[in-house]
Length: 388
Ligand code: ADP
Image: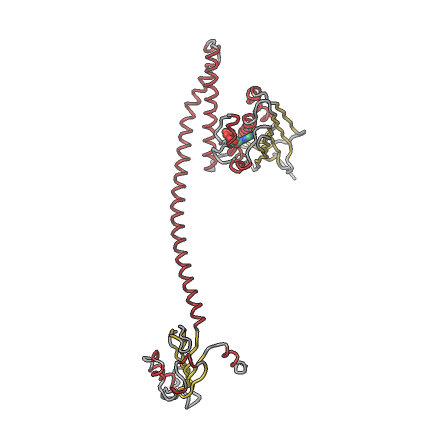
């Protein structure tokens, strides 16, 4: 079968051949003779005279002529094509032909220029790839070093914040205690209006500082994964009332219209009561801070769509949050650009902490907001003893 189609296969290749006798002399030639570099006139001449690349391989050639080796190949060579003058790549081989006395071997030349060029391009690309791999490895190492440095700096920052916050907390608690004492007139005597005002300012500033210090401590605990919850089965209505009681003076000061609603038969919730109060405090105090006087605020607690959770919602008619800033709202220390419209003080820490606390409980916290149209913050906490 192969002999039947051999001419078709060979027609696809550029090949020339020369038959050789026992003295290594050319007897006939055929194929694409320009590859050989000689023609029929060379008959009778020794192959090594016609193909200088074979000089030095006489011993191996003799082995082929005497049937000791079946073939011999030369490493690929390149030379200018006799006819076209273009550089071409050639494979030389001498094949033993022990079955015929007058043709003991056949010298074959194959034009492999296309293959050689493709191999060259491949080698070049492989080299470039390996250079790129080296460069990538170097960059990766540099990145790893920078990452380690950044991690160390981050740890250093967290340690610094923790130590600073701890050190600040005790003297602040002492100041707060003495301010409370000063405010009690039966202990320190009657105060003048100016003294009462001044002590009031000290009181509020101390509270703000204490709040900030405890936020900083929470942040470092959350970052380090060291914030533990004391979970209990609780009635959260009391939490809402407690927070509203604490914030009532601010609501009154800004003459907000506050509405509170609880769905009927609210189930108990599995949460850390202190932490839930902290979350509610953050969301409701934000609603108060960022809603101009006379605005409306509503607080609602109801079952979530997912019956395994209870949903807390705080809605206001305040300044809202610009769309482009909403993605950054949970970043530590981030405050939207419009907070200055209501000159509300803050540190940009509470919301991120509130979301982490909710997530630690297994719930979710989200919001919807539009500038000057108000904000709606909501979160879920798991219902205690929930069974499907
Ligand atoms: P802050 O101490 O600044 O209030 P938070 O972390 O609680 O820090 O909130 C981050 C930022 O989110 C606020 O500075 C404010 O820009 C925006 N924000 C939070 N709640 C509201 C709200 N109800 N209305 C408008 N903006 C809000």
